[in-house]
Image 1 (tube, helix red, strand yellow):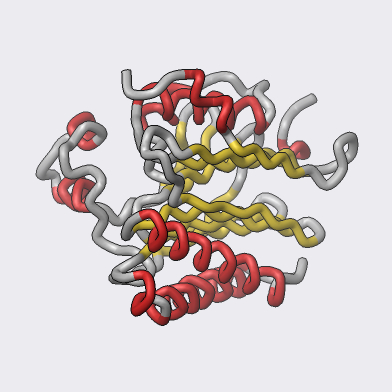
Image 2 (cartoon, rainbow, N blue to C red):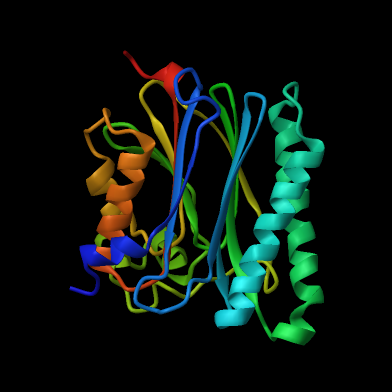
Amino acid sequence: MAGSAGNMSNILTFRYQRDKKMGRYDICGMTHAGLKGYNEDAYTIVEIGNVCLLAVADGVGGCAGGERAARIAIETVSSSFTRRCHEGMDAEDVADLLYNAFHEADRRIRAEQHRYGKMGTTLVAAVISGRRVVIANCGDSRAFIAGKTIVFRTQEHSFVNTLLQSGSIRPEEAEDHPLRSVITHALGVNVRVDLYEEELGRERVLVLASDGLSGRTAAEICAGDLSLTSEELTRRLMEGALLTGDDDVTVVSFRDRALFFT
């Protein structure tokens, strides 16, 4: 067993609610260094009116470089969202905002590589407005939508996912593959931005996570219990990740209270 529940005492927790009693959104983010001793992950939660941005980044390139790259990515997407967001934005506007923010972050990271070396970062971001969710990702940090099962998941930019999509390996082999941490795209290295438009249906949650949370762990924990608050769900996902792995891990969970039966 690589981790232990005792590691949870070091979790940095940020609980965001617009209004504790009447707020529409229930959101929680947590991050942990795992057994590495340093944390190259970063995340943000930003709300403007009824539009919300969530983002998670997982830096690569060593302690200082990876941490800096992840921070640049989060700062850039947050700043772009704050400058350009308005409640009348359609899905195309949001996709354009995210696409440009990812590429701006890529340029900023490359501009600092002379100081930090060949650093880079994954980035997954989601903008929620009503039931509509627009998601962008680069690398192997992922977003998924879950009810009683996982109904949507982004495609990770990883060597193992390439094997999986080509039929070279089976899904059950992917989770424990020795090369599962090898990524094919990242900001600052070989940027690629995939965009998705999804609907957040009734009694469904949106989760963003770094690769420290495995798909298997997420599926097992998300299945069935729709009564969990975002804080309870996030904590369970973090505990599951720390008990089964040693990587740094970040999880952000989102629930729209208007879509849950009372």
